[in-house]
Image (cartoon, rainbow, N blue to C red; front, side):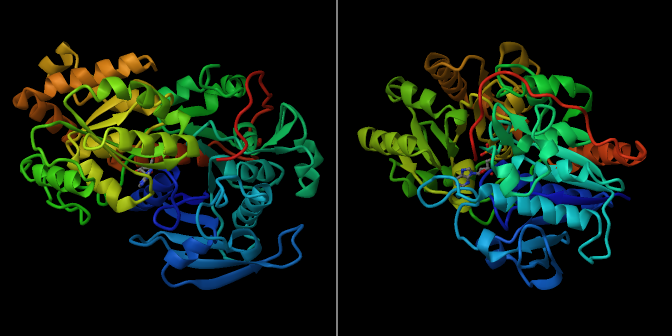
Length: 505
Ligand code: ADP
């Protein structure tokens, strides 16, 4: 069975800011269930060390250009048997809070060095140079934070195969040109065929150009990112590597997200025993200071308050939405301007719209359980997890038909309703009017309890556990292992024209 080293900047419950943390916290355990020897390497953040159970220092490695050695701390991912190595280097990682941003919401000034260190630690473990007596067959790296790992490994004559997964293409890890020398990276990386991207160094290109295979988290997003509309200027490179690119839908941790066993919610329920869901609605209305009315439809929204998530569309649509008979509960953090606009809206529509500007896992569960509907008007969505949680919780998703949302929510068209396949409401265009129209459509369906129950039950009957997707990763790992050596080290990727991405998540 394959030995796989997951290299990632997040893994729930040690560290999570979004879907990346969910996936790297649940996929390795699912793979382990299939017999894969999956292990994790992630930064020894202050909070990760605090949240980990017993820690044991198992290795000290010297990683140039650092003078002091780096310690690898061994533990297991809480609640699983998946081994974890935390890269302990306090000057880089001993900071509480967000792994990418400082307290002012700006990227940490040394992010390039912090994530180059993670990649170099990955190379040391991958080549069994850390004294762990374990050599992976595959290094599975995730998002820009780990992009240098496949790039550095490609320079090694004897190396494991590499796989790079894109969880969000909008974040590319762009740094000024002089970062290359400052980090002591090979000069050969400074080329359009390598990591240069319009005059910047793009960590993500390390994965896109050099990894043996690339995946992203839904089939539709895999197609979308090869187009200028979703490609953030790198669609040309992806078209060039299209044969190596595959979309595998994310699964969910169905133990953590299970309304029949959820410890965070007021009343447990299932598709067969759906009535207690009502208690969660009442509890949520009370918690958020909304009138506890069983009949008024309650829409929930949980997520990063970012342009990606269509927050601007929602804000524009609010005057029209708030004329409808509906309540809205929002939980999120993100861009300061959106946070303020939502606070203002909550004041303006008191009693109809309630918001909590916070990041809180337990509240997220209570919103999923208590709302009747869940809104995701995303401009793009690589996979999206909240709609999957919503389906599992019988909370009918209203989504924009992009990326993973298009792959997982069956729009309640007359045909889909008749065939008993409908699981939600989806809309195509990113405009406030289409959003309002979709909500109106959901409200109309909600008026007929029998129809509504059927849609919710159909959603609850879907299997979005890791069972299928982990098997797809296993198949890919097998292909990678049997594709033979010596490793070619990815392609001769080339940079593509277009817009510039953001500097850091
Ligand atoms: P993304 O990774 O783009 O942020 P996903 O839908 O893939 O979006 O995953 C988001 C994850 O982060 C979900 O598990 C969601 O519940 C969680 N999440 C986002 N914002 C919050 C918040 N404010 N409080 C609690 N959980 C949140």
